[in-house]
Image 1: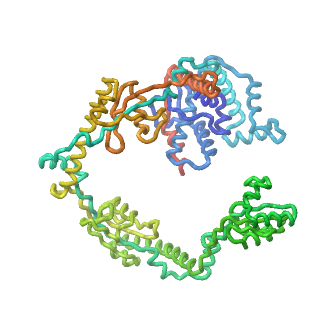
Image 2: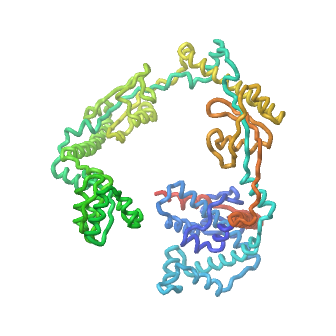
Image 3: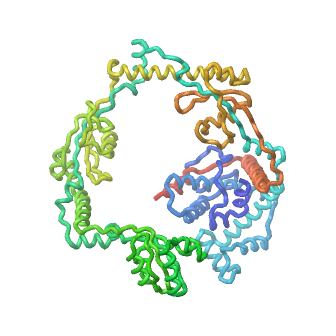
Length: 622
């Protein structure tokens, strides 16, 4: 975090307004939950220092200007909060720099600005016109930019005094390295469900209580009655008249959908003369492969493998194109005189072209016309319902089919378990179970080319089934839960025993199961039995202790940490040295955050005008 804070704090305008943020977002620090909704035009106030909303708006809109795509409303709010956090941090440090009397000369500020690469002109020197144009785009006047740059440099002096030269204590680095790179081994015994023996069936009283306690598992589903108006594009398409012009327009607009040229995977070797090419062709006829010929000529694959091409790809060289597309698959051409000399061509694969008939294209056009006509039918239906027509009457007026479903669940099944074909569309089912009772929803089209309009006429809420109807399922579920509880308790007791005995041998003997060993495990291991949850538990356990963990197949594992290894500290390893340096910079960055928080408290706290923040970022997703 140090590098990020330093880069932002020492060059906020340059880095943030022009070249993208150089600081990653971090949690909001030291911000009191005091928000004001008055006519105040300050986006926040730090002690007696007000910061006008215009500065926040400028930073926010510059961030949007740099974004590749417009952010969603949620992303816009997140961007706004990051900017507020950065601005409050910078303001606290600026105030501290002022109180310490840190100053920057005009020459230093001028040198800093003129060194910015984006401000250089065609000759590579600082160009004042370019400078003015860029800062104007970012919403700054020249005086404002110079003032902010002066604060950036002064703030940099403060950070230099606070952060530079800090190095992580060696023992701290060693502890972190040992923790991150620790390796563990475990031994384990599997406790199977069979080890708890048979579970006696529940009594009637117990079973009835179990069903009552789990109504969601033993109830009928919710059923809904619905009136459905519908039409499919396939119903309308045959009635649509597609003109020759419409068909041709479809071909011209979407030619690649109907006509795909033949493609061939080609290889080519060039020769200096026809005689040389003929000799090579004779060698191929005698049994030499094209690849072997390429090796003899010291060619790399990229030198002779042309890839998959169409005849149009070779249009610049008609002789080669004609020869290549006259060959059979796996055949080699006779010597061909192309634009670049003599070549042999080899076809390794042929993908036939695709050409749809005009009748097939006519059917596509008819379907598109049907989909367009369905929009008109939807409008007619909507107007009829608005005039007081029932769903059935509006469907008849709009030319739609009508179906009434007396009872259907969210899986499309009737109470007898049969599938209701007229309501099997998943989008239709979702709409039925999302609609309010009695409301006529707006017509909607589905991805499979259907138009639906529905009204939910009534609902039958879930009801617990009679005990006799769910006896077998409820009894099996109760027995499974009892077995799982006993298995969990048994595994926990065996793990406690293994911890006390410092061995899994008694547990294995009692179960008649073998002791198995894990592979070497790191904190990042995640495979098979040793998934992330299991590995986390093993690394949290004390060496030599045992623990009971659920396996994915319903059994339990009694595991014991059998070994712990800490690799030696690589004192002279470049990657380790760089890592220690980066962590040192991160830690020193925390000093800056603490310093800024202390300054905030000393000045009387921070107040944010959340209403102004929200009004600025509210339309970011539009």
